[in-house]
Amino acid sequence: MGRAAPRPGPAAAQIAKKITKATKTTKIKKINKTNKTMKVKKMRNVKKMKRTKLAARGQQPSAVAAAERATVVQAAAEAARRAWHREVLGCPSGAERELEELVFGASLGVEEEELLQRLADPPRFNATERRGFQRDSSDSEVENEAKSKFVSKKPVWVDEDDEADENVDMTHKYRKDFMKSDAEKILTKKKLKQRLEEQFQRAMGGVPAWADLENRKKSKRTASDSDSDEDDDLLCKTGTFISNSESLPRGILKISTCLPANQERFADGRLATVQFHPSAQVVMTAGHDRSVSLFQVDGIRNPRIQSIYLESFPIYKACFSVDGEQVVATGTHHNMFYVYDMMSGSIIPVQKVRGVEERFLKSFELSPDGSFMLLTGTSGYLHLLSMKTKELISTMKVNGRCTASAFTPDSSKIYSYSKEGEVFIWDVRSRKCLHKFEDEGCLEGKCIAVSKNNQYVACGSASGVVNLYTTDVCLREKHPKPVKAIMNLVTSATCVTFNPTTEILAVASRETDEAVKLVHIPSYTVFSNFPVFRRKQIYLAQSMDFSPRSGFFSVANNKGKALLFRLKHYSDF
Image (cartoon, rainbow, N blue to C red; front, side, top):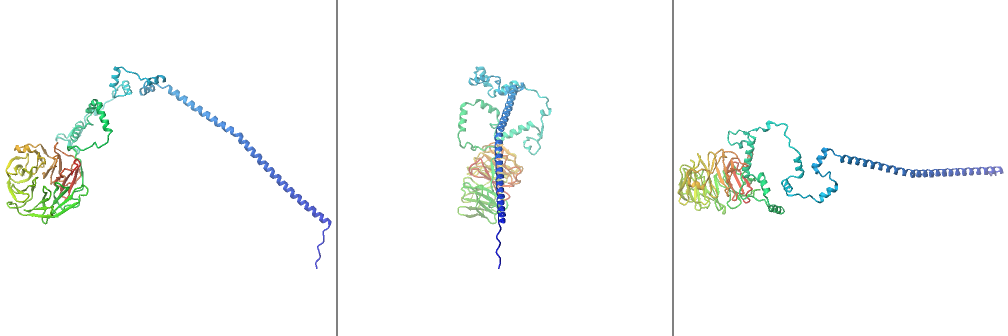
């Protein structure tokens, strides 16, 4: 068995008490020391914050004072700069003062009150001074004063080359048209300028109002107040004040190129005929591909209406009847012709006509009244047929060989053109020759046309010259003088036609490319912008025609195309 622990003695208990007490005392001291340290730190922080606040409160007045000092310095500098500017501007030099007086007037030296008084009460002038002001009304006061002060100076030196006339070579391809003869291979610049002015005046039909300076000045001086009031009224209104002139101007023709009339079906080979329908907006084409085609003309698509095929019958010429219900077509090597009835859709062959002893029937003409058909035979024979029955009425004969014929608009006369250059005028009713005349300078006749108003006769010869006559002279004289000899073709003239208004004459040759010219009848001048320069599009022209109201112009060429052009001067088809 174990023994119990001995009890401590009195001495040990006292020692333990002392140790416990010492430990407690040490802990208390440490706590007191820590609290004291924390209090000291807190006091230091408070003192530091107080010092910072005091420092900030002490610095604010000093910064405001510095900013105020800077503002005062800047204002003083600006005031000094302005004072210097006033000093400089207040004492201008003599040249500056003179320039200021010229620009602003002589009122700079006047006091402000006097200037205001002048502005409030403008000075009054007597009659002499008023007339002087009216005489110089076109110029301002400053300009008049400047003119009076400045003296014109003579040039320091003169270049003799400036005064000498410089010569221009007229053989250049762009200046050949201005030569009037071969002797004018060299012209001075002054003469060339005159030629250009003349050409411009011809193209414009005279000197435009804006280019005539003298008339403009006169009109300004003589214009009254009523005229100015009318102008003001005109400018205050809106509306369409621009309209086409009733008469066709010369020089430049307003024309645009459309798609070919037979765009949807080109002919295979040469296109012999193109013709507009007399009443409908339709065009017909016929050629050596043995077909006759009808197209609607809209200038955009030109859709195809119908095509007929004539077997083994290359077409030499085709033509609408006057009522537009039939198409008559002749062949290149046949003694018969076809009539296509568009109303019934039937093709009627007309075999050999009794009394017409011809090997081939090629060229023919239809009378404007729709009563007759004229067949051109060989050896100068002309066969007049009834359009209704297609039977022979009478036969006429010219001296030599007949190359072309044309009816007058009233269908009362026939003009026959012989190869020898003679023109025979026949009466349709009696079938007798009324008159005969010679085409001036003609060696071989090729084509003939009579204007729609029965005023002109155009005769085209193998030399390329197209003579334009008046019908009254042709009926009286045997050697009439043409009113105009058109010499713009260099090969034989093979086709001539007038437009319905007799303002344009179209002449063409099928022997060379782009040989088509449009002549302005009132002035007998050629339109310079047709065909387009250096642009090949027509090629060999075979046939030409104008629409019933001259709105369109078509040319059939050897490429199988019926070229279509819009004449913008005419508003209708």
